[in-house]
Amino acid sequence: MSAARAIARGAEGIPLSDHAKLPAVSMDNVTTRMAITVTVKDRLGVLAQIAQVFADHGVSISTMHQTEDPKDQAISVLRLVTHTGRHRDLMDTVGALRELPVVDEVLSVIPVETGD
Image (cartoon, rainbow, N blue to C red):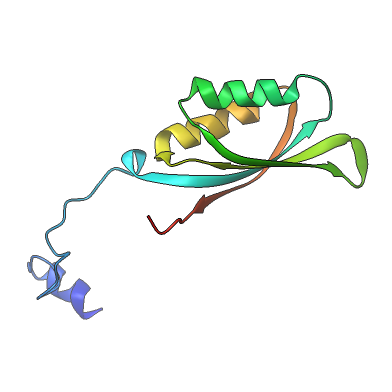
């Protein structure tokens, strides 16, 4: 609160802070990794279609794990973790996955911290 009050009064940031004068970066250009979980129809060619969406957006898949939905054998759950990429490209990929006819649902999209 005291930092917010100081800034509101015209201060340039938190006194003695190395971060006080850092420029803001557009979220579009922040780089991160994402863990994306989707449910898909369990049939031939689905993984190829999913991989193509990632390739079309310049996003690389680091790991992928597939399991059958215990309630519906015609559905698979895919858990994909990307390599580091631009946030905008990652979110565009998720948007394209949502539009893909073989994708039933995007269950989660979670940024992954790697310590890099």
